[in-house]
Image 1 (cartoon, rainbow, N blue to C red):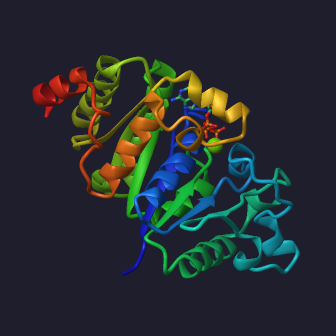
Image 2 (image 1 turned 90 degrees about the vertical axis):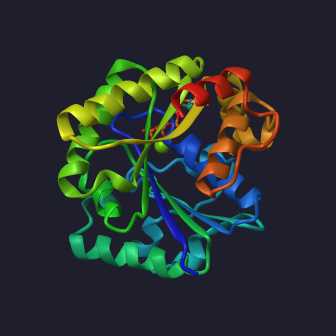
Length: 265
Ligand SMILES: Nc1ncnc2c1ncn2[C@@H]1O[C@H](COP(=O)(O)OP(=O)(O)OP(=O)(O)O)[C@@H](O)[C@H]1O
Ligand SMILES: [Mg+2]
């Protein structure tokens, strides 16, 4: 079977793409999938740092050192492999169309035996982000409930709508204070997309604002490894289970969530 290709992106920067990509990859691997996580932030990739991986390798080595993807890929755990991103050299942000196409094809070939290939992209509507759109089967747009992040998420949705069907795009609300806030963010964007683009927007779920995320990030560990019982880690595992078509784990869905699900479906 060929892998499912997921791209995680956002309108505004700093809303949690890397946190979500790395933790969802880990969770998907923990429920028995082979996952290839690609740091597709070609300019300023930082997944390795956030996962505590000390490596000299970067995606630039493919272009300037004659290395292969196999050479630069890091085995994080039995089921999770990671391709490091660019390290700020800047030359990768100006790859030609043909070079980008080759790069993407080499990712797909390299990851052909995985269950999931997950691309963590940079923020915004750059060509480097858009080039991954063509191959993504699922696109997750991350936003926080703050108005500037929501406005940028809508801006991105509008651009994507011109390029392709929004059917394979889902929204993830990160750093939500509670379920009501998550549902509020969902509804606002859903309504705007319906009214101005005349499309339906899917909502994958939400992750709570949780100080354990920041704590684990300072410790250069994934929150789902370091604090697996924390609210954010439970949300992330539930998102991974949903992506994989499984139901939430017992005990991780609060009474309020169950009530909101009954009300909103
Ligand atoms: N649910 C959360 N609760 C608390 N802090 C969070 C949460 N999600 C992310 N953060 C924190 O927000 C900051 C930005 O997160 P992250 O680096 O994942 O964002 P990003 O979208 O990848 O940023 P960039 O656009 O720069 O690539 C980090 O310090 C991270 O620890
Ligand atoms: Mg990032």
